[in-house]
Image (cartoon, rainbow, N blue to C red; front, top):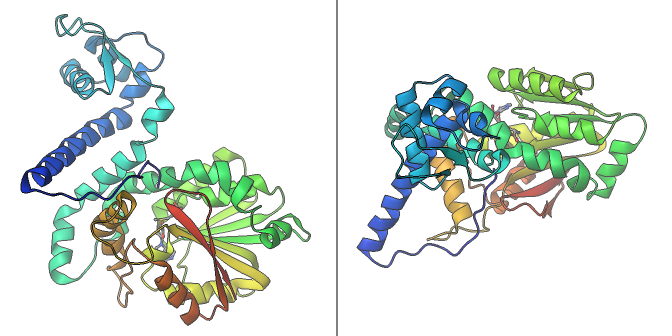
Length: 361
Ligand SMILES: C[S@@+](CC[C@H](N)C(=O)[O-])C[C@H]1O[C@@H](n2cnc3c(N)ncnc32)[C@H](O)[C@@H]1O
């Protein structure tokens, strides 16, 4: 996950302040939906590099209907996301332009995609609340698969191989040594951790696996485009499957332990996959040590995603630990102990929303 979430806890002192805050949240939700359309229909991309576009220009460049183009442009200017030359000009004569570069606009696109994906499962989620069942990952659709990959791709490609792994000396040394290391990326999603490792360490091979076929398809395409498909293989497989005993020198599990329904079984299976001297790096949400309320924006973000996505996905199985996104360090230590690990090192990776845990068998 990305985004800026620092700040003091929100304490609402009056009924009025609370309703104002919820109104602002509704406005934010509407902005998010309209940003989503701009992202998915390629409207921002169509505007990039153009000094000023009318609604007819945008409609013809992006292949959309002019009336929708005009409403979208006016909303975006009203919301302060786009700039308009002359608001007094007639509706068809107004010229709009991007206020910022595409990269900063797109930095929040994954959040818009994931929120839209979560909104689509509301009927199933209400049913799950009543019955105690779950909502399957496939119900969230392709937006959710892509958003998840895009949330973590920037820091994985920029810092995982360049800073985080070199910051763990024994792991770094093994990844550089002979014979070439074999690495497992457990619950790999769109595969960016595998790709980042293969790019940073020129000889290692990575096996990425995930239960979700759509994620594995996307991971294969991503690895091919990144030019590492010869050393990175992706397969649909349950992380709890104790298949490849003793095969891997190192394993990673990025933002996924809280999602699996049986975390202890998964951690035990990974322990069995590790060769002597191997270890598992779990990267998961940087939660507080204990529950607080009201909480800071990071915990609000984690709880929000937990209610609408991570917990319902984990509740589809039986038995399930039902962990949820807010997996606190003590919970992880307990899972690790029950799965037979000897030690857990907590690593501050310098990320705003994630921390690392190195599990030593
Ligand atoms: C939040 S995503 C994280 C994906 C990826 N590691 C990343 O950083 O973007 C969690 C992933 O765990 C996968 N998953 C959940 N349970 C699993 C299991 N038992 N075996 C394998 N993958 C599982 C889901 O399909 C999903 O792709």
